[in-house]
Each structure stands twice: as structure tokens, then as C-alpha cells.
Length: 225
Image (tube, rainbow, N blue to C red; front, side, top):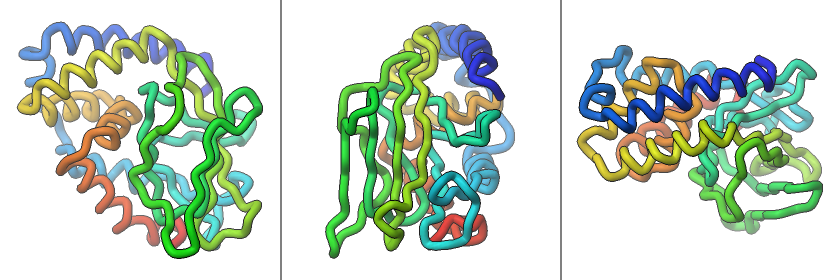
């Protein structure tokens, strides 16, 4: 899907999300199938294994990025539309290094020690991603050589969509009873990127299940150790 297609779809989704926030008793209560746990496993099963340079590989540098959801653009490069301004990163396996570049400069670097790796979830530690902003995310797996980074272009969704997503996140955060129903609706409507981002961002049983499923399936998917 092209970046323009993402933008057009995002604006349509934004209107639907705002409607869900405005009428939670109606929209969030709609039944969804398959269940959240089934859909989590399905989505992880579709995750593309990535290695240094963006190629598929079974070597030590390979990993799967579960949130944000990664796609391949028409040029064959990895990209991820970021639905929330402070995304929580979820990757399979441990990491040695996380680097975020903003405007061609390193804005954030997180490095593991010899005795302690970087483990998911990884909280966003710098200024929020702005709508339509593009950043570069570099991830180096535990045990990978110094220059072996998985490189992902992060792109903030449109202003309308991001505002709607933040409003929904706040609404669900105040309504714990509606939390799972809200996610069921998003997953049923195939708004997978936002659903996974919300699960990654919210500590609790759903994020625990997300991490558990990710670890269980990572080897079979070729996501490294």
C-alpha cells in the first residue's frame, strides 16, 4: 500500500474512531469475531522476519517487529505507520541497541550492557512523533555485529487520525470494562496497527498475552533467537 493510500484510509478511519469515542455504549459493545487472543496469534503469525538491511534471514540479526506493524513500501524498504505519538516498541527477542534518528540526527540511543539486554516492551523516551513526521528506527539484535541494524522508516499518521486515536486511547483508559470490547471492534474492522499499538501501550493481561504469543511463535517465523 502506498503512503497516499495510507493517508486516505487513515482519514476515513479517523472519522470512524471519533464515532466510537462519541458513542461508546453502542460501538464498543458490538460483538467481534475472532476473539482478541485468536487475532493476536493470527497477526503475529503474519509478521515478516527482518534482518540487517531489510532482508529476510534466519541468522542472529533477524527479528520480528510486532508493534508498530511493519510493511514493505513499493521500493522494497521497511516502513511502519505510527498511530500514536509515543509508540511502545515490541520486538521478538532481545536487542543490543535501539537508535532513533530525527531530521538526520540521532535523537535517541539505547544500548545494552554486556550483562543485560534490551527487552520488550520498550517505552518511547523522546519527544512525541508528530503527524506526518518521518523518523528512522534502527534495531540491532542481541549477538548481532555492530553494524547489523534492521532499519525501519517510522511515519506518523495524519493529524486527524492521530487525534482520534489519542482520544480513543484516553476513552478506553478511563473505561476498563469497555477496554476489551473496544479492541475487539478495532480487530474485527482490521484496524490492526492501532489495536496492537494500544495493547502494547497498556500494561496488563493483553500485553502479557501479546508478549507471550510473540515469544512462542518467534522461532517458527524465523525471527531469530
